[in-house]
Image (cartoon, rainbow, N blue to C red; front, side, top):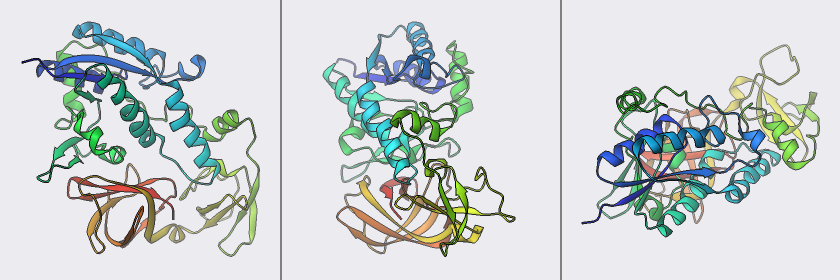
Length: 359
């Protein structure tokens, strides 16, 4: 019987390299692919310390593919990345929301585009170096599950994948810790065994989102007022793209006491500041819903909700559901519920689904 073929999205890092190595050892015919998504060579040739979308990533991935003796290709996804990730990122910040470009990239580029091209090549599956698991439930639906290493678990960033995408995806690293992956890379003689992980958004390596947005749009951020919860002017801000909910540092103004960003108002170009207690809330509303373990949510259903990637999760109850929204009540107030970020719902280790926070 012909071996199954899997296309591995190779970022040049240790995780995707070991994923390719593991699948090869399991008998799959492995093809390595790096997605060419950088828009300008100079802007993206900056990730020698572990990035995932620049030119040095190609060279590292090519060397690993040569070591494993597998076919290797670079596929052009610049257009898809620009439209679905960069343009989205800019649009959300300009609207006073805080986007998650990695989630957008996973759904629209790494899976939607790469999967279609891979199937056209005759592949059965695609895979990446994500730390997560896929489980098929008794009713036939697929779901993402937390990885065995909760410290590295990346299920949150994958909540938006579709059933079709999950049916054609493998996650070989879900059973391992990062330290084990590095040992496997050493044992396989892979040169990337000790390559550091990337930390920043790949297309904004210096973390200066506001400057990036100004460059993309050709327009400068407009200063406006810091105001308190009653609308009283407290000072001037540099432009709403510099701020996110819960932020304390980098406000650029001394207020005599700790203050935090409570709300961003693009219509009036105001940033609302308050005390630490003002950043907590016991409810949220999410839209643009994706269902995973079940095809719908139930009112009154108890869940664990993660409101950002590094959030541990909080107990909540689904208060109401609609065609493309749900509302949650938290058992205890949570800090910095941020419009534009994802909220992902879990039933123990299974991802039930999630949506984009609107308020």
